[in-house]
Figure 1 (cartoon, rainbow, N blue to C red):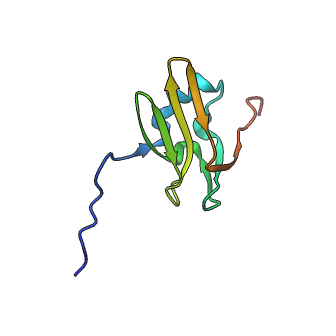
Figure 2: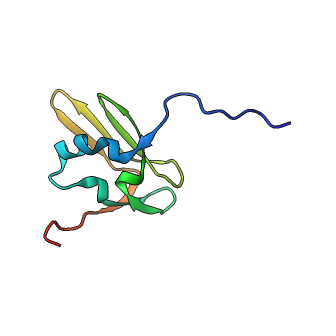
Length: 96
């Protein structure tokens, strides 16, 4: 008999939901930036990541392995970004 594996807790939305938050930090549309996960090596647009967040910030999780690739936190002093879970990020030049 298999156990019931229902997910408990917040349900993620896709990373596009953080477009406004990312605009505060970057002048470009960062939802189309290519991010390579440090955990599994998968590369996808940041907008394809699973997003968990609220008014204080956001955690972007890899759509392939669910590792945290980017963390954003809003404080009274400004925004903090932690990209320890991203091996690299590519942003296309706005001139292209």
